[in-house]
Image (cartoon, rainbow, N blue to C red; front, side, top):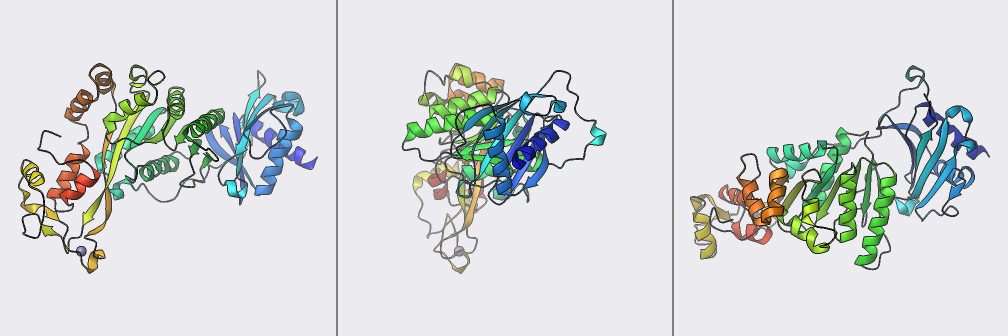
Length: 437
Ligand SMILES: [Zn+2]
């Protein structure tokens, strides 16, 4: 009974603020109650994990009148609390609930989101009579994409994508390109600058724990079809939590892709990754998943897909043991040399030497990102539909404010003596004559 009263107190406190939602988050070592006031998150209260859990259980079991089934910590469940289960003075006509497991699942992590419906004429308590509530905790540190190798203009482009209220933003690249790390860096910056926005993730598995997000993992799926279905289910759960930002680990099948695009057009900022080599090939990749549901004439809209970022990691040459490409020690194919000559005077280009103490006898001193940030617009999307990716790519890159290709950026690093041209071919693309890329 005591717990039930505590639960009612919490709903009543949220109603005083005229909160639209209550998020009860059990994090393993603590629980936090956040409420959405005038569209922004605030922290109402901190509890122990156990207190949070027993309150969630009390709301589900003894306040809710309609519910999926009896409380099961491992299931995603819906329920509804009728207004007459709550004090009449708070003007709440009903509370819609969605709950389920979330990170850290190994420590019984869970969430419960409650949507509050108010009676007509509800005014809430006067602002001046209410205690000021803090924003949820924001991530520490600073935006590291620049330190990872992104140019300032690219960082600015990504920041502009972060400011868009909705639409899909994709990080692309093959396995090992660091696309997921880059996406999390960006997301972390979003949380740092906008701690009042609800961020929900669906991942397989959770890669970077984020205290400022509700993270749902896809677990126990035995094949791609089951993974797709589990992803789809969790995206639907995520949408019921009234999130501002949704992260989907990877668009790897039609279910996830369709769910991502639907979320993007219904007012959410959606971040995800895609396994594709060229950023302009995201269109082909989506269509290959499902020609019927994923038709470029539908999703090639710059309000739906806002940006596509491609990234690779390049080894940085050790300055102590690298050798000039023109030296006899360098064994480089004629094809590469001839192609590089069309880009400039190759005497500044260096290649891996035999290694030294400075680089652990590896020839390189770490890796950095080379990227292309494509901010879509009406013209490039129209080109995709009318003329295909080749023309869309060519026309877009010719615009004065567009990003260079990763190959062009990488070749520039080679002329700076920082990258072995052979590493460019391993990670980015074949080196071709200038103008032919
Ligand atoms: Zn060295």
